[in-house]
Length: 142
Image 1 (cartoon, rainbow, N blue to C red):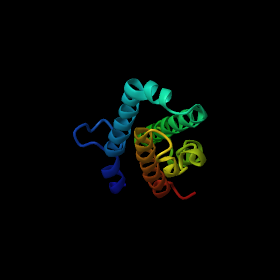
Image 2 (cartoon, helix red, strand yellow; image 1 turned 90 degrees about the vertical axis):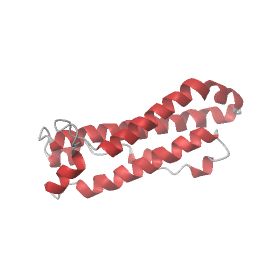
Image 3 (cartoon, one colour; image 1 turned 180 degrees about the vertical axis):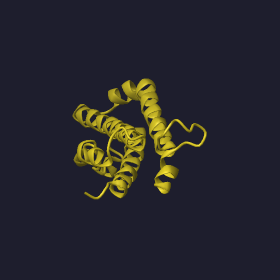
Image 4 (tube, helix red, strand yellow; image 1 turned 90 degrees about the horizontal axis):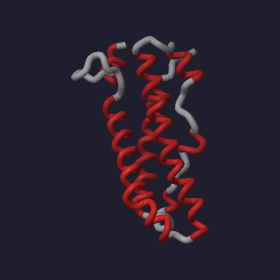
């Protein structure tokens, strides 16, 4: 349990239990994606060919899905650590979601979609893969 405490607590706020590195990185990516949508999304959508607009929308949705799945997973881990949810229940009912969609490698889209979209795809995939590995390491043995 000692190792788990090191992973999940923020020493500056002892009553707040979460993974500050993953949480902060996810929040930064959410902010970056929001800024991109707000500042450049409309212009980029106008520049891409009509046959790529659906692909563009799907990939932006994939970024959002990855980040929202990670945030939900963090909140479940927080609930486990604070003993509001049993570890086995968390593993069985509230695992990291949408692996089949979120673990898709999008590198083949470099040069096809706007470069910042590809940057967000790469960063969100890398973060999702790290959380996926972490999830596999902390699952309780039934």
